[in-house]
Length: 69
Image (tube, rainbow, N blue to C red; front, side, top):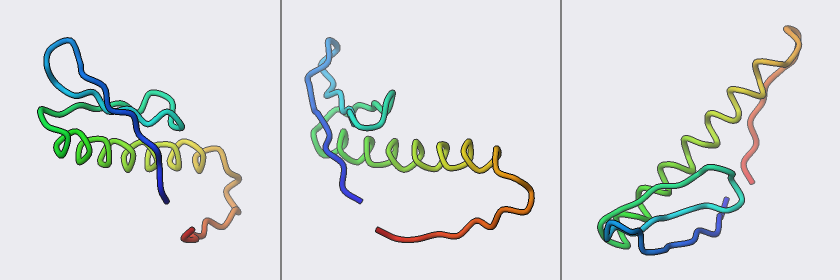
């Protein structure tokens, strides 16, 4: 999957990275490369957490499969 991110300078001199399509998915870094690496990790963790939240509400007999897009 591909996500658009926004990089903006923070008040403390760090770069703030945000993924607008994933509410609350924000990170930062001292350099652009570090900010991008950090938001990539934040996106991964955001998605992983969202999947866990969604699967907890499924019926016990539901089958969980994976697909790659």
